[in-house]
Length: 266
Image 1 (cartoon, rainbow, N blue to C red):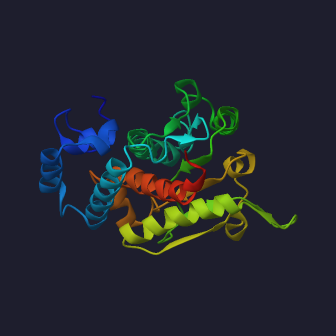
Image 2 (image 1 turned 45 degrees about the vertical axis):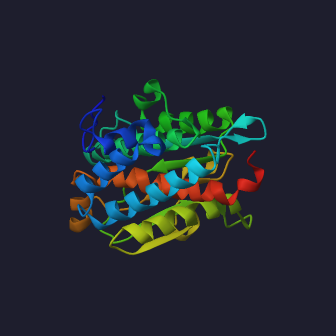
Image 3 (image 1 turned 180 degrees about the horizontal axis):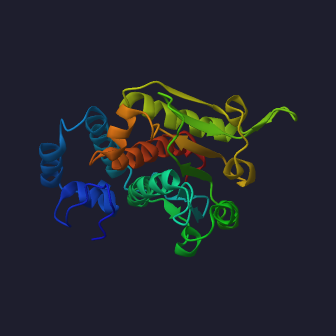
């Protein structure tokens, strides 16, 4: 098994490892008992996420694992990417990319276990200059026909809140309704799991114009659950379960958003 820095992935017999790497909904009852016994009470947010994943597992079993499998005749495609790239020459951004890669892999694996096709940046894109990588991600997402997209980041500047951002254009009086719904669902999970304030809103409220939101043609959201330069947040980021929890929170928010759209699901 691939061991990504910061993750709690241990080996193929570990139930949480099995959940994160693609079989979350298909663990046996004995494996779920082991998972709870081993990881319960490690942190408030991990307890919450374990409960929600268990609930979704039961729901998917009732629905014969087909909850999100198709829209019409096509597989649901979701785009998940860590922010920045590994070639950045800014140390703090490289740290952010490495941490968010753990969250990206956890989120993507859980989505695949739920019957969702996940599109992630190619290895070539991960080694591009950051500006080229930004363009390549948006192009890839659009070409694949993804129904939603998230880019996972960590914030900076000493704040003490989590946020999810969606596209708007103040001058034209426009905003992404789907992006707002997606950001809201993820923010609700952040709020239930994290110990600091959570907000979500359009990019203009933060005086930012973000390429990923500007150029993706589907509902999209940029996520920043913590500040990498705020002490208590950094402890969470660097903890064994922090970035795996980030990926699981993102997964739950995406799943709730897609469930809200389930009338279109075959």
